[in-house]
Length: 96
Figure 1 (cartoon, one colour):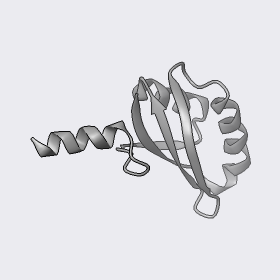
Figure 2: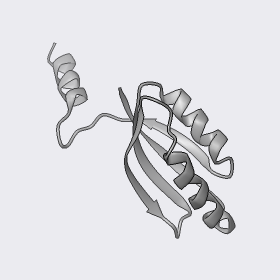
Figure 3: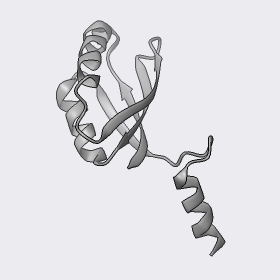
Figure 4: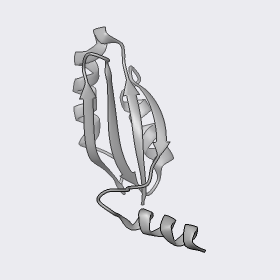
């Protein structure tokens, strides 16, 4: 499973519409995908959400199609704390 952050943004006048569509979309995420955490800043009309997915491209396509009023920027990440398998893999690679 790949861990990544998606930076979402939308126009301020579409906040209620986007919020409603996001709530609906999160109930039907593609198989093998999960939202880990979500951090919303309504003043900036944006959110930073951590997802885990077997197919990140499919998840982002699903989100874009489900909420076209919202833009999405994908950032692959490694979980540093609490330590996860990706961190140990990175340490192993660096120690070679």
